[in-house]
Length: 257
Image 1 (spheres, rainbow, N blue to C red):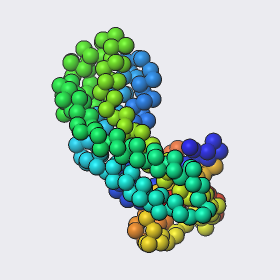
Image 2: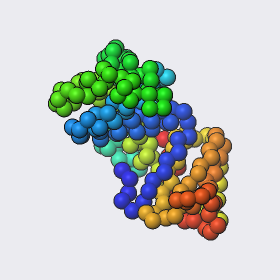
Image 3: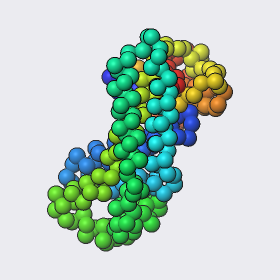
């Protein structure tokens, strides 16, 4: 949950976390566009669906999500004997993780099999990464599909999206646990620059940088295995953005679970 008084910027610290954040981003856009019934709502929904199929063909999402669920279950299981742990809450989380693991193991077909087998989606995918490649004159079949009644379009998109429900639920659970794995710390970037070493004995997944609403700055993050640095830059409506020339207070969360 993002706080109402701040803009949250996130920086993944490993490739798996980058994939999970991309899944979350695409599914959120897909769900938001599905809330509308206009042609342009469904155009956007199809665009997000095509983005999701790109992810599917570039990596084994099921395996990546399963590995992270199992890793988290293993980490949290070791915490059961700690006296300061909220035992009932921990048991509940472990049950959720086990449930998602069992559900994904039971799903034999690849994610999005129906989408990948759709001739319409297949034709749209061929031109998806071309600049304005799916204009009406390029894709008459898509233009025909968009002219169908809104309930019919909505139903078909829903059928294409249904297999991703488990993926979205598992991804949300993983990211929720990781985001809640550490507390915020108030930091200051001296003249807009902040650097910190990472403990290589710990598994770091995500940086969360919180700036108050109305701040003129945004962060540019450079992160490696041993350290990360943040440079705050002043947003510019015109011209080149300039680095901050003053101390910048911010809140930082280094998520490691």
